[in-house]
Length: 349
Image (cartoon, rainbow, N blue to C red):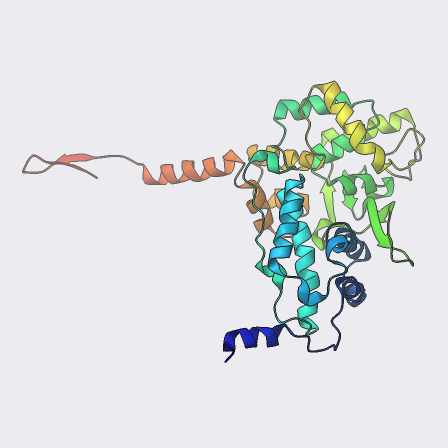
């Protein structure tokens, strides 16, 4: 007599909605049709690009019920062994899990084998692209060397206001009120992926939406940014109604050129090279180390909530822990009065 558990497992894994099990290629196509309009077009294109690049070449021809945890684990380990960072491996894993969850909802499989795989953990600093924030001397030196270069305004915006790369590139003069000393963050410029009529993922440089609703914000300009803007105006390059970060002819700064020029700037300034996004971390870290309230830093960065700011910066900003320790120490300490009992024993109170 057959084992009841084995029989049940076979029954659970049988397709219930289709007499012929779909291949992963076909399922992927139907999945992206299902999320159209539910997620941003460029997000869907990013998801498709990841699956097309890392998952479907191997798993696309397989029937859905033949995709299991051991096969998926081997794929993720191979990506890791080939040099992919743990965070990127987990991003690929998340897309696979989402695709297979669609198969579960369709009734094609009973359980999601992607959820059975393990997330990859970062075990050393070399396994992440995130670098420590620049020190105050490093940040100042980078600002000095950026003057009179194409990246003058860009570096000032990233370090002086903590803007994301796309937010800085997307700013226009119409967003700036020099009289009030404010700038309105309302768009992001970057490489936007989309799926064309042939189902291919293509990429173009254009303005797009901000990361979150809270990213739309009004910021006050400080001296670092104002001075860079006035230097730009004094040079008279470009169109004052156009973008703040431009080439010499006033055209939007090409993203394909940005990283190369930024790396060269770091070398000229003899400043440790970090990702462009780490300039944002530098501005936040320096502000918090300078005792700026964490609520104001969270709002300026456009975080969705203060808990996000705490999660990112509490482990690395010593000032936050120092305030805790100093405050607690002050409360616990006080005038120490020693008394001697009749038995000759000292009591501290």
